[in-house]
Image (cartoon, rainbow, N blue to C red; front, side, top):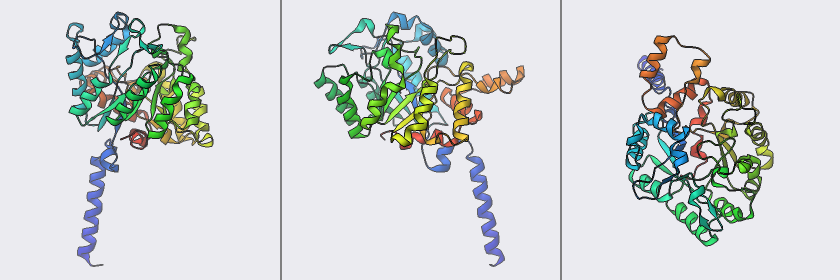
Length: 367
């Protein structure tokens, strides 16, 4: 090899190292795969006439108040259009995520009829479809209640699939859906046939809580065994972890049950996954630590975990509880927090989450 060729190889190697260094924290740039946040809640209060609905209980509760803090929005500004603008702005200005799944939410249905008095939050599919059509960084997370009239349920499911649904979402207790009910089977068959995942909230659910707390058991991920056996690709939200288990013993969640299911998934040929959203709170640090450990020790493949933020629920920088910041560092951190989606992702990455988790949705969602 002549000297000029050797110099050229050294230059190419140096350029590659520089490019890699510049791409740190941007896995989509390094791997060619997208970073997808599969857990972003669309919402509205109902003043636009576009079908959104929120009960007075939800609007006056802590969940909505926390969401407004995330948006840095006073209550009097919180109309449908303003909330939509803030949501799209977060998605559009994110430098860490390439696309986000915005989640619709069907209302409670009984005997084929919508029950507004028991539906705390409704976001129509058309509302999210409109945002997805207008913005290429928005993916449709559709929601169809399986207790709708059978013909209507199938028609709406197939319409959303035709509109490009990346997944379908349920909040079983909040929507009063028993995943073991026979009425769910036609829905499961359609999803399995089309390869569209079911994204199911599990554990404790405060964002859309049940009117009847006796049905909180519907959030047990083991109730989705039938769906998994049929061949549905299932994603369990929040890793089925409890919201306040450290201070409320009754709030046990189903984290350990889900860990057992994930360990058995290969043997049972289940298309089972879990999203790591809602873990950026001090009470959930130990669950995120456990996930990191399960991956590191090879008990569960990292491909089983997917990234989600649960925005606009606010995220706390849980890393400060592991390595406390000085007051000056804390203020600098708060000022430089910037885009909320980026802030959440950086918190989870700094915590030590396996890098593939941020792009695994490319292999799981219907894109």
